[in-house]
Image (cartoon, rainbow, N blue to C red; front, side, top):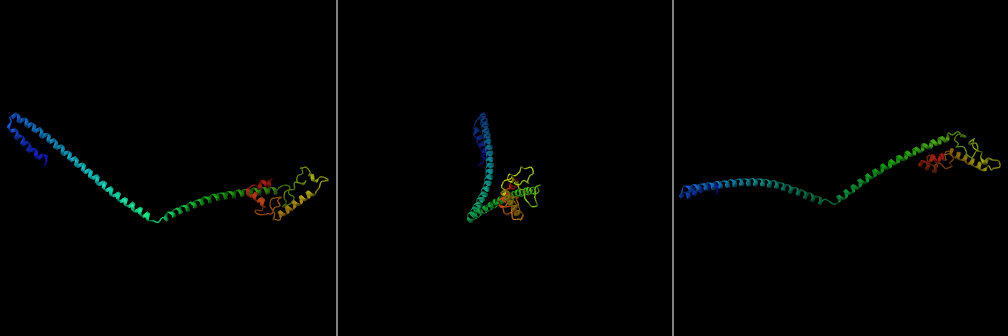
Length: 238
């Protein structure tokens, strides 16, 4: 029953009850009744406002509940998809992991081979450049030695330092003094002549004074190693 429905009868009853009193009492009771009615109306108004606020709160809570229900449904669908994905992954054969690991190893080894190949090519080009420079230096030294002023004949090596004709200002050879044995000088000249003949024939080392057999690049084994190391020019100059 709404409070407004019993306010009217209550006022009538209160007025009837106050009818047996004098005017002063009636006025007092009427004032009291009016005051009580006013208080009741204020309470009813407050209750109505509170009821309206409660309804608004209930509607807001219902909206929030609907939104949370939708989110919960979406989360449930997502969990179901994840479970199905996990099930598919578990059903796949375990050998796939081995092949993945093997492919990763093959790719790593290929990269390593590429790096090693690049380093080897760089070292090879550096070595070839060094050998080319050493060969040019050797050719320059040989050319300087071959174009010296003390050439006896075309194709011959440098003059024999033991002979007195090599340098006019040099002191005389002690072996050429009177009474000295001439066999060492003759033997050395014959060895030098044989070396020159052996080198000129195309079978000997192209370094003057070397009696080794020609192996590679026109040098013997000893001078070829010096040629590879880049020290043939110093050795020849010495």
